[in-house]
Image (cartoon, rainbow, N blue to C red; front, side, top):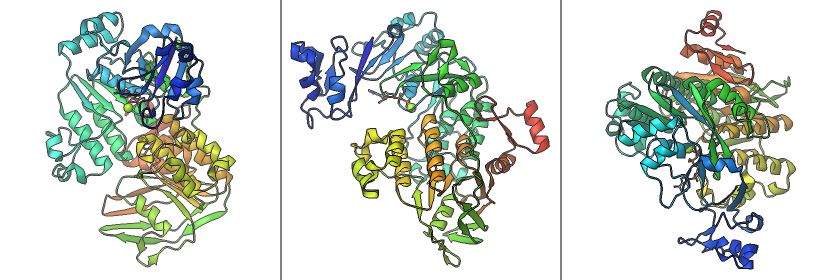
Length: 572
Ligand code: ADP
Ligand code: MG
């Protein structure tokens, strides 16, 4: 079986493209006119039955919009949903489990949100018949014998009430109108009185979660709940979901592996080809499922879905003690906020992680050592060049290639940078306008352009935001080897503990009262900094022996009790 996808956004017909795909098709030339044709909306379309998969149009499309993919024939009977002609489709379906928390793990664009919509009646399975759809009766019949069948039966009867935290946070208006009850006190009174437009990303995410949890429902769905939340908010919200939604049927999509692991009982993996098709795996127990995902292999389905295995290692210092930067004790006052920082040193070839609550001065610190803010005694002059990736990335109206050339003219002829570019998938977006990039693409572009700038210290503010797990791990490897190979230094602020643990050799914990005052702790081994953070929240973690990923211990489990007693909150 073959499937053909044409990305509607990429296809530039009829304005900028004269249907090159139609012109080059050997079948069309032979007279099989319907093989490649114009849709009503003037975009190109390909008849998947007539197409002979020669690949000519795929190679000749100037906008790289076409994919022809061979799939095993058996898969065809698992087709659950297709949006449109030559569009994305999903095989099999996510299955809620009564009274349990099921996690969904997979790359951006693999169909997680599509599946969430299928089980919340926002979309209906159409089994590929996107023109006519399928009746509810037909849907129930087609799923006979599957876990999902009784669920959908109840859903269509109206016997299941769903409360959903959507992935995109498109709220407007007053917080109080969105979070009516604030049942679990997720939102402070102060914020309840504000308007959404005045809130930070983390606060808006909390509002969305609080609103979803306010509803009385049978099924709770959270599509990427941890984005923009700081580490304390993540842990707090995870604990509230675990406690208050106990025995509720819950579905969670999340790329923060520590949180996904902590929150869920089971997982379903989605694999396939991003924005072309996605396949939903069987349910697996969370620990096994995550480890299979990292291994890229599903034993129960005998399915290898990734060429390489993902290893999560802690970064180890290379022993270099060559000073790259030192700063003295200093205080910085910005508006109402005071930051105090102790004397410290960053060595060549090392990556320093920064962890801590939102609003306690992490970004202010970054700006201070860059010389961007006034100290009590003037600006810091460290004589360093710093390349800075801000937390929020603005997309300007410019073609990606031109933007990159403006940073480094000859980046395309540099072996190092063209390698990094491919690994981050930037080569595929070079001709796109920055305004049309997805959140993940924008983040990868920002990471890449930060590395392109010549500097002594590379400073990344929340680089994991909007990245899927594979991207996070790729970013860890890329930044890690770049910094080591070039004997530079990096400072990375992030809230994903797997990410911070794997990318940094040393780290500092920021503490304080949000938006009033903050203090930067000493730079210590990363495990020690994480240890101090965990002490503050009375949570213990260990490393999974198979994959090396950090896992939160269940409260009051044997390990939890032992580690608390010994004070080793993070056992490695
Ligand atoms: P995920 O949540 O895993 O990131 P999504 O379910 O959002 O993935 O998207 C999967 C694919 O489906 C993407 O390629 C997306 O462009 C496509 N898609 C989403 N909505 C539509 C739609 N209404 N019409 C056509 N394609 C869509
Ligand atoms: Mg999604």
